Image (cartoon, rainbow, N blue to C red; front, side, top):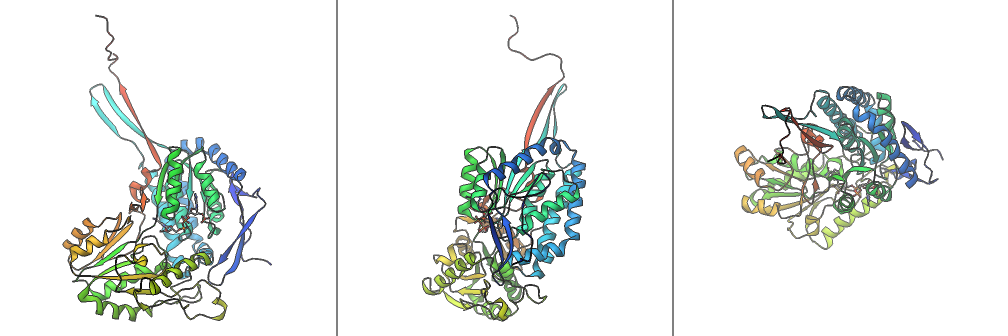
Length: 498
Ligand code: NDP
């Protein structure tokens, strides 16, 4: 049977390469569970070859002047924009996310980061510092690339994650071996081909396909200087543990269970819009989701009434239909996980189900086999419920009511995770005070979810180590060298003759 997309290969030495394992796996369309493409599985020998390719490319790429690197990456950013619709279509088929979303967010926000870092290094952003110590001595610093780095991606924003990792990595003069999630691998080869078309030398960006074992092998490989990982906390701990054993650099972008605190003076309509974006965008498969929605008791009835009205604006349907703004979950495994949480919420936590639940949304016949769930809201939740404590990573909102703001902040912080947080209020002074008290690395005031290239994002507590994007993001891809220069002509020594 011919599949909608050609077989995906590995990519190193500047071209697609057949895997030596002789094994393939399939990626499927989550909207109807139909296979999309065969993907060749990398053996350890293939990963070795990809790493060797990146090692060969490193000396020349790291010595390439930043302005020249910048030109190539800028070209890649413009190719990504030219091919936006084609890439977005593949992302929609692979992830199940509505095309209205992938065509306006996923590729664009990836290309933005590439352009941002190209411009940054091209304009001297990675220059070091010079410190005048005394008349005849100074110190200068250099930001040197790390070497061959590994990028390991999650399935929720495939091409965006690949770009958020490769853009600063390559701009800083490193080379990369990238492993996409086995659930959404279509973009890997496409991105590598775009980089090559833009003029990136062979071996600077390489792709290996496979599941966790391939990621684990990459992480433990002695030639890998750094691992940039996006995924679950539990996997991140394993990856960071292995990396630490070899003293590798890491960036860890992990999960969350983020609080959205609505203050008593907030506009109910805006708060509902914010809470919906924080829970149902990308069918809830966003790491920064604000799944714990704290609302004042006095606002509960009005908030829930407006929420139920607005839930009708969440439109599941054919993923390429321009009215559809809500796709299926990414895979059967993930569907089983999310629905088991919804079941647990109903049967064990016994939260009040305001809307949604286990029934699939109403869909045309050809989508019946897909991994669809309804946007689901539980209310009258308590802090100890499992649906309130654990990351579900699906469209499941928990409403928690509070009496005092102080209490809401305390309860919002009572989690081991600290990825994101947000406040809705008309009192901007109070907003800053509350944000300052919330223990999270990514925060919003009267907004939720926007993550531009300029904004450094990363989690606190168990939600991660380091940040991506912004000026701070690229610092994680370089190491410092400090040089003291003495021009006095005399070496200060304690070993002078008495
Ligand atoms: P996983 O942790 O399951 O997987 C992430 C990646 O790691 C995949 O490529 C996976 O391969 C790979 N992997 C699995 N096991 C290992 C291992 N032992 N060593 C190295 N790599 C391994 O995460 P999900 O893909 O399920 O992604 C969802 C999670 O990602 C959520 O928790 C979400 O919050 C988080 N996330 C965080 C973001 C952030 O910026 N903080 C952004 C986006 C998502 P494979 O998939 O092939 O098994």
